[in-house]
Length: 91
Image 1 (cartoon, rainbow, N blue to C red):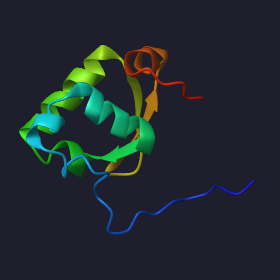
Image 2: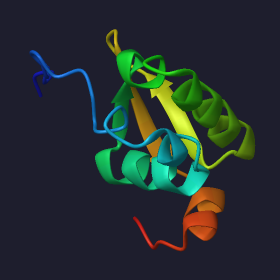
Image 3: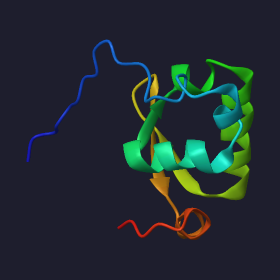
Image 4: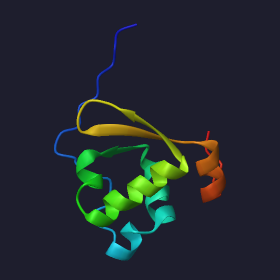
């Protein structure tokens, strides 16, 4: 089977930057967006100090498995701990 490649052109955010500063600091708000999108760009999480700090806290809690892809993308897969914390049932 041939490898599939995905190219993202001109898309560098998943909606995190548009959140209010308060929501950018709220773990569950950011985590729900990550769970929905399943990926993020380094530009998303470095856009504001609030997002950087929130992403660090989410990573420390183990709510997601993060897998780097082609720059600037990272896959974010919700873990069992994340599902429990967010109250979601995701395959």
